[in-house]
Amino acid sequence: MDRTADRKRRRAAGGDAVDAGKAFEALITAELELERKAGRIARHDRHQPLYRCVGPGRYVPAAKGGADHFGLLGGGLAFAVEDKSVVGASLPWTRLTEGERLHLQDVFRAGGLALLAVELRPAGARKPLRYLAPWDRVGWRKSGSGVGVGLLGLAGWELREGEALRRFVVWCKGCRAWRLTWHVAGACCFSRTA
Image 1 (cartoon, one colour):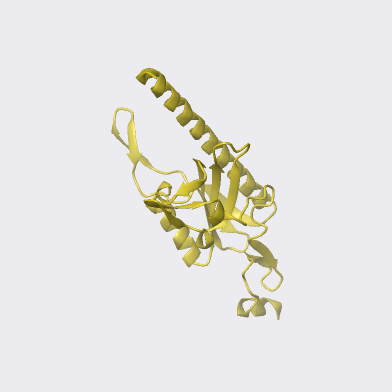
Image 2: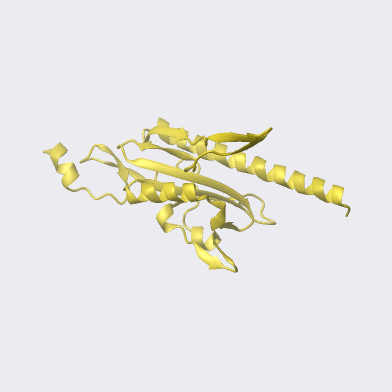
């Protein structure tokens, strides 16, 4: 195969990957909008990274970016969702920027809901495999010369379209607010129920 044909083939494959990634981002945005309409999300924003011009037609990130989606749950807790779409059966750790990883880690440490949305497109699969996993429960594993997460590390976290956050957020009668499913009614609830 000559270089020109090979270059065209790679460009076409790259364009297909970009289109698939944009479609997955649109799906996650639509899922979060459904959750907002259901009241589980009070505010949802898309991260728009800042870029600076470094030459004619050349732009580079001006600051560390964060997760693709962030906002507030109906009970006031923060949430962040980073979505990644990859060709293959695993997501390499290096596909997440330092800013994305830090944003998810900060939200998790602060008691919020940090999620990683992953779309895997393995060779020969009829349709993509989609997952929505809590950041602290993603099964990262060393494989070869790198770290990544594949089918086993995401098992049990399949994306349920139309009910993305239902397994993570429940209504607390004591707090009278949406809370994470692992929330235990306690002192925070007593002042409002007395």
